[in-house]
Length: 145
Image (spheres, rainbow, N blue to C red):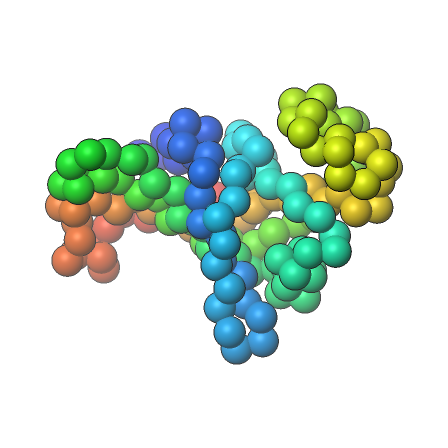
């Protein structure tokens, strides 16, 4: 497996669970990844939200993507642990608003809105998990990106 397999999986299964740290308390919430490519896994949030503040204070993150299946034996997950970088790029934010028009209802609806935050996971480690590998976690192939 290489990075493109992980990018493809995330793009096909963008609904995920994202974990941050709030002091010594883990915080997990559902997220919808925007997109992934060779430069990272891209997300967005609002600057007033706790998740944004937690990531600004501690950029370490873990995300779990899952391919749904009616058969639990065929379920597949991808775990991604890494570091976040916030991107203050007006062209990128304009693209976000074009691709996700529902975000225009939040704040000013413009790329320069200070409430709009775009971030990517740019470095880390990823691996797939299935029921077949359930009890052999230490043997699972991991990639660094």
